[in-house]
Image 1: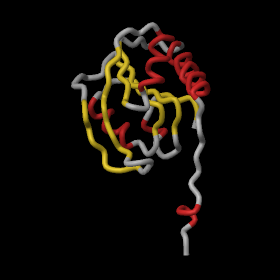
Image 2: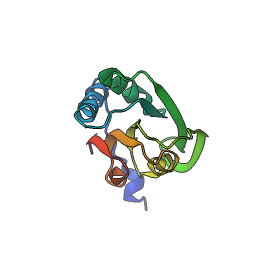
Image 3: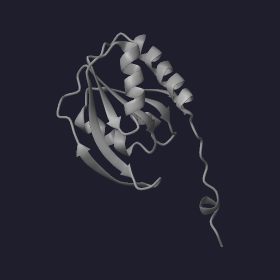
Length: 136
C-alpha cells in the first residue's frame, strides 16, 4: 500500500516576479521599524535574491553571507555549516527566502543572537523562529 504522503507532494511554485514583489513587501515592513540595520546577512542560497532586493530598498550596502545546507534534493536533512559569522548580531538583519521547520533558523539564531531575522515566506512549523515574514 502506498502512503498518502508518498503519492502526493504539494508544491507552491513562486515566480521570480512574485518573489521580487514579496521581498519588497518585507522591506517595507522593515523600513517602518524603529530599528536601523547596518548590514544584511543572507542565508545562502535562498536568501541571496531577497537580500539583494531588500538591501536596495533599505539603502544597505554591506551584505555578508552565512552558508548552511539542510536539504538533500528537496528533502530536509542534516544541517551543515559551510560558512559562519562570529558576531553578536547587533544592527544585523538576517534574510532568508523561507523558514521551513526552523532548523536553519535555530542555528543562525545561536550564531547571531541579537540579529533581527526576516524571511519572505514561513511555514507553520518554523514561523515562530523568525521576527518577520510576508506570508505563510
